[in-house]
Length: 64
Image 1 (cartoon, one colour):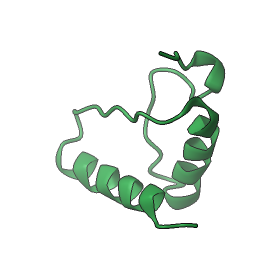
Image 2 (cartoon, helix red, strand yellow):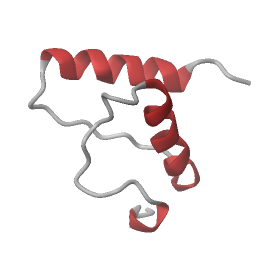
Image 3 (cartoon, one colour):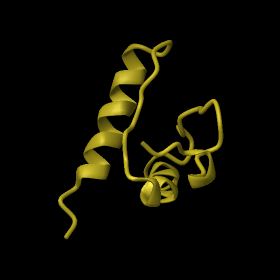
């Protein structure tokens, strides 16, 4: 049931970084959706994909 949470977050981050390009963000999501988030960023912002320190892969995600 898509409520648009991903799109809202991507739109917010895109606008935030337009005004504050030197800032960073942290997304806390379950490890099984990290790949989905990477695909969503690519889908909605193909030219404006965020830069990451590491590639977004579940193997690099630390669980609590």
